[in-house]
Length: 207
Image 1 (spheres, helix red, strand yellow):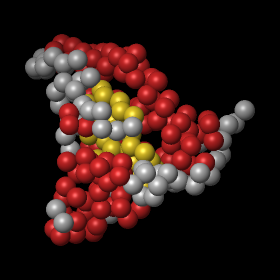
Image 2: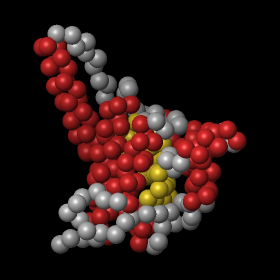
Image 3: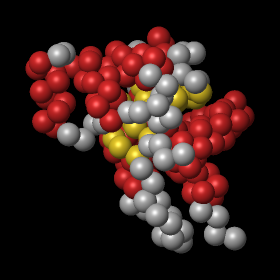
Image 4: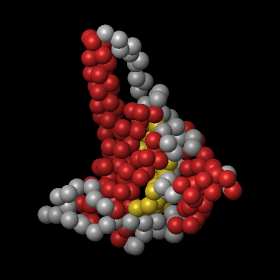
């Protein structure tokens, strides 16, 4: 799907822009629901299975996807729903340590930073979630390469056509949005929230 650009100048045009943008985002989520619901369930099942065996979830991405990595990791470790009383779940955002990231960028090249941190924290049976709106983020691709060679399951949130990462992960979800990353990121965080709830419901049912 491609979002139609709108020049919002007059009050009526601004109102139309708001409605158009919200409708487009809703339609994009409907398309993801139609095309990727099974993959969302599979991702949640892989994460839950890893947690059951003492594994952990590592998450990485750049820019807005780095922020999404931190957002989701926090909801796994601290809390997602205040109605669910459960233990912390082990998720680590590889995007949060400025010393590690800047040292890595300086000493081994930025493209190697997430692979290096995956080497440091990842173990066989863990899960790595890579987030890339283009599917072409070399830093995430190299982390996947390390993970796949070392028994770490790989999950991908992608956008557009999936880029170089299309077909690279054990399970991928590609948001079919062509254009700026914003609408893709809105879908990615919604998908992440659904996965967290599915994992909570599987591991800590409140019924």
